[in-house]
Length: 286
Image 1 (cartoon, helix red, strand yellow):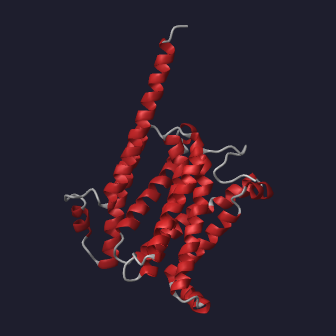
Image 2 (tube, one colour):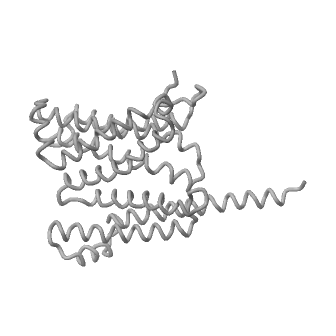
Image 3 (tube, helix red, strand yellow):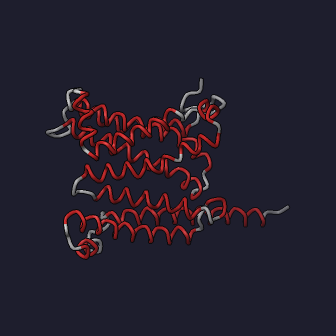
């Protein structure tokens, strides 16, 4: 039996061990604070919010693994993608279980609420799709399904990402700063995958990463302004002006832009280090 923190050969993988332990931290923090009554006046509601939020975060992190391993030239990063994806499902399931607890485990009532409230319907559909991916995440299921069928099934993760974002937006009501930032990051990840098809080995050059960061940052600002204009009737120009007023770094578009620029900087640094190593090797005496 191979444990999650082991390589295929059974040896300890420090990377997998660190990630495996880190995946428990948000849930442990929520559970401890729930037990101590430190989650505010409505602790169960806050716990539901926290587990759902981390489900979305881990889903995005799992989607970020492929781009990051190319940007950072770190192939072994792919070893933890499956683990993070399963964690996203576990947190989403905890999200539902806590909601059932909040409803005193009145399952008929829970079912009626899921059918009656569109954002709950979307959330439950997202969980069902995540459960299908989690159930088929083992090596044995890959063999049973076959590589092509398995890949086709797991491409559902992109639709799951969209559904999770819609659920997140609706339940956040008018305070959508973090959902907008998450949507911007998701747009970056999908754009990287699309544009990477035209790059070498699926990777974008540094200039491509810079353009992607700026483009997605602008799209995030425009998307936020459009959302508030449709939801509340606020003049979009006021939202766009707020993105330029200090302190502006906490605004969703700037968060997305800075993350994109940081990745471009890391790619440039990695490129320079590889170039320096090649020069040193070429200058080394025979």
